[in-house]
Image (cartoon, rainbow, N blue to C red):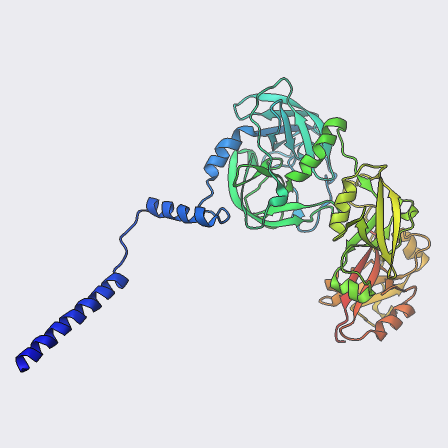
Length: 508
């Protein structure tokens, strides 16, 4: 009995041990080593089934560059002398590549009036030799030469240019069957998408850099038209005019600007902006845009609440140019344009783009909300006036007189203000009928500072209440409570523009 029991016990123990070993062997035994090629193949098989967006491991820019590079050209432009004017308006944080300045010179100082050569890039868009580039690459150039990828150097002529979007179309004549860069759809771009840039940075021909789209719709020079693609693909002096290319080998931008504060922030004009104006550049050599003469801003929740607008979308009128189509049609400050030709207007950018895309002389039917009531008006569009070289409506005024702090000891809403007098009005070249108070100081870290109210601005209204004197300002400011939203209506003399700025009253 004991012998039989021992035998059964040993048998059961062996079976249990075998089963436990099998379980552990199947679950814990390391997988066999797989080669990198096999892993890649397996990964690609999984990716095809899931169909995710292209990633860094699946984008082969070597193939893309091999196809596109023959259509990329180097451009040399000779100007009669250094242009001391700014080509476009600049902001404090972004500088465009100034191709005619180039790298610093370490040799003898050159005569600034002597002809200067600058290098840029471009890409062929038609087999007959039409080439897209930046306007600032060929601006004021008297002689333009283009070097093709096969080594030939040819003279080029300007077909047309659009300084407002920094786009130019040039052409080398007598050519046929040139390689062409396929154009994509920049409206389909997404942040984080992989892109590459090809160009002539610092004279190094056909240089390729790779990065991602880091932002879409960046405003740099002109808030009404700018729609730049921001990328961290390296862009340097000489890249201007070259293509920004997506993972499918399509041009989706024209490299145009770099940040003066960082080496990894570059900007490109969306290719859709170029394709939209190319027909006019071919036919007329310039671009004509529709214009109603009003300055607009978005309807955001703070603005809606502080002004009790009653609408959640649209473009709010904050300034009107005297004698413009908008002024003749009777539009007023605080009107909210909610539709254009029966199509809803989501924001100011949409309205500006759609108006600018129309021909001068055409009619636009606008629906707007004024004091809670909808009204309709038909506006005959004029031609958008060209910008000044500095991108602003008027020249910078002389420095403002510094008001003694004792003239207004009270700092309310983060501001110190003073009454306007004839001396200041003349110095600032203010409109004759303008009434308001001059901002002489903005407290750092205040809500007014955050809203970009600046010394030298003229405060006209607060929540649609006129501010004709310091007494008016004090009365309205002292009646405000912590947490209240106030909309300042200010005039900026430097830009000759009225703007709405919303601030939240803080604890005093």
